[in-house]
Amino acid sequence: MSKNLKSEVQDRLVKELINEYQPKNFLELQDILKGIFAPMMEEMLHGELDAHLGYGKHEQGPKATRNRRNGSYAKTVRSNLGEIPLGIPRDRAGEFEPRLVPTGERDVSGVEEKVMSMYAKGMSDRDISTTID
Image (cartoon, rainbow, N blue to C red; front, side, top):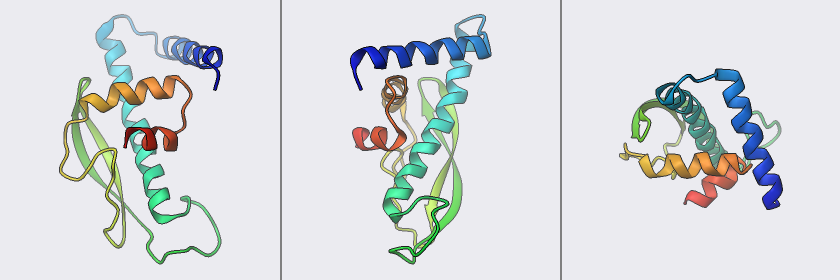
């Protein structure tokens, strides 16, 4: 993606956020970012599980593995934006180890800024997950 296109995407996202939520101060802006960060992290975690299993969530047809999705479990992580509740996806065999938020890890302070920046630059969930590894 060219530098100008990245800048255009970033500008568009910022304008959409401000128009949609109309924050009055920094605390409101921080709450908005916190509300956006959790679904982004969860989407990236689902992308990791897709890669682990070798197929997408609603993909039809034969699968290369007998292992399947098995819902998610709740986990609260700490970040620069405060505590954020996440739904961490899991597989039936218990083999899935998320890289974005590893088992036992509760602090994602450094990750959130990188993720927000990469989203603003137009990267996909899977690209971001691979980059953060």
